[in-house]
Image (cartoon, rainbow, N blue to C red; front, side, top):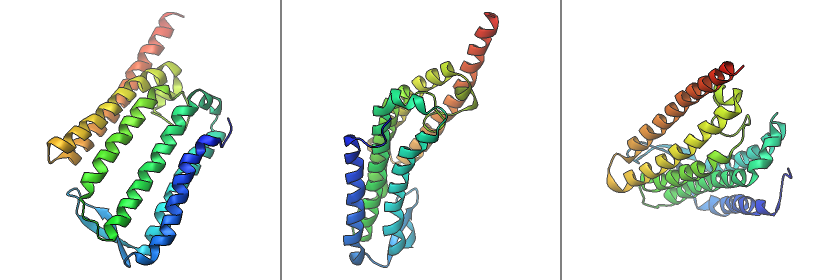
Length: 220
């Protein structure tokens, strides 16, 4: 699987924009930049501008390079060829997500007035819907996907768990988006729904594995 193709221009251009943007905006930023928000969307911690303009672009670059190079040392790297397009959009989605979060942080530091919950919830909802769309296409590997002891031990368990996981992650995204528009506890709703989905998939993978192994034993 080639490391870089023409498709990689999109995430690379986004990364270069973030780096160039950091250089140009640095002198305009105040000495202290928002770095954390509480559940009500209020700023409750600050970082130096030097840390901010180095950390976020480095984070975006690091995530991108990690997702490009780690599959090369995955013992199941041959499986990536079967979902290389979904995997490309997943890593591009993460690059866009963290780049957007960085731009929001800078915008807030420059005086922008928008509650972060009004920004992050729709963004997270779209990210989870994206993950949900592509999750069923992810084949067994040690880096991407729902990796429980049982999905890694059984390809059938992996496939069935990821089929359900795709539906649940899309549901989490939709619930989060609806919560954003319909209630004032959208963050809490999102947290409950994602933990419920993860717990359900963990339990589901165990019982599917037991069923698959039981079926094999009964047929031997």
